[in-house]
Length: 117
Picture 1: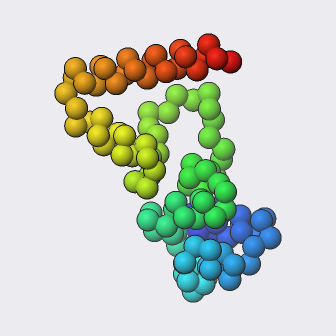
Picture 2 (picture 1 turned 30 degrees about the horizontal axis):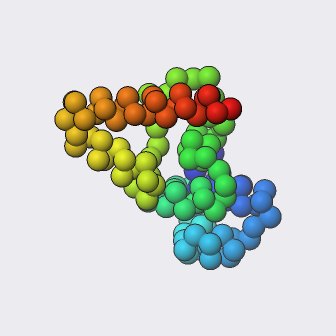
């Protein structure tokens, strides 16, 4: 099954018409039709909005299965619009000493959080 077919399946499962999906995502209905008829996939820049509208993890949309949390993935998806992206970008600009201070501060915050439970 292609990603486009999976998107159409998910919209159907959620009781959403192609028109509703189109309005919520800004993706023309003609594009949705090409996903089905021509077995095409959405462009990568549309995946986040599709996932947000369908309330689905990008991993599921791409792979067709739930992410197995027991697997130790070598990657993490971070969208440019998320504040984590800004943190990661700024962190990468720091020298080693500053990075060590940030990591130490994060460890201290995690310890405080675990004690307050």
